[in-house]
Amino acid sequence: MNKPLVAAALFLVPGCGRTLEAGGTETDSDGGTGSSTGDASVTITTTMTSTSASTTDATSDSTTLSTTDATTDMTTGVDSSGTTTGGGGGGCCEVHDTPSCDEEEAAACVCAASPECCVFGWDQACVDLATGECAAICMGGGSSSSTGGAVACDSTVEIELGATDAVLDGTWAIQMSQQGEGMIAAIPMGEMGSGTVTWSIDVPCDDDWHIWVRAVDFGANDSFFARQDGGPDPAPIFEIACDGFGQGYLWRELNQRDPENGGPCEYVEDPWIASWATGTHEFQLEFRESIAVARIVVTNDDTYVPM
Image (cartoon, rainbow, N blue to C red):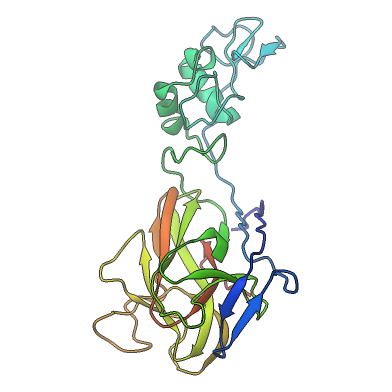
């Protein structure tokens, strides 16, 4: 089906450093002569449905959302006729001291069922109503990691994350690419490769997620160990390529090769799809051969191929 698009972008400021990329050469950047091509951005294209609250006329009792013309005090969630209202306040999926919450339809649903949620503070009982029968989406209104009830995707989602969005350990370092990739995670010249590059990924709905990685393929140095949400153990091998003739950066969808049995191009899963529910998930690359990774794209579009 045709899926509507709504986009938002994060722009990150380039840093500086030394980089080792395809070709085995070392370069330095002071941040003044090089420019990033936008090494990380997040694009989410999604529309989700939630339960709508019903409205009644001015004859409704005090527990029913009203469509009268009475003036509403949004700080208390009560209009001048004493009718509870929805909208405003903090996040629907987090406890807060103010009445109501920031998703209008979910707030209206909760207030109809439990008017005190729009008169006093938004307590755990209000959160439970919002995330349950009132189907709050929980994408705004604060930094809470609560995801609410399950929400199946009904549109396309694309999430792009750069190297600077990741947590690095071992000998991985953030550096400026000299091949137009912007900021990258790389193993510096002279360092023994070790450690991991880990992204936390917030998915807004339940679906099967395709993970694309843009990393350097130089000769036979074309693979990582990879994990989704910390597993499996031992970590499978992810190959950017398997022909041994790489000469630069490539996009490759995540695959899974047995780390103990099987050789190059022999995959247990290709692609290796992540079946993730709404919430925060982890994707990790561990050093094996490849010495640089630029960014990833996570999408529920099984036809998507990054350019």
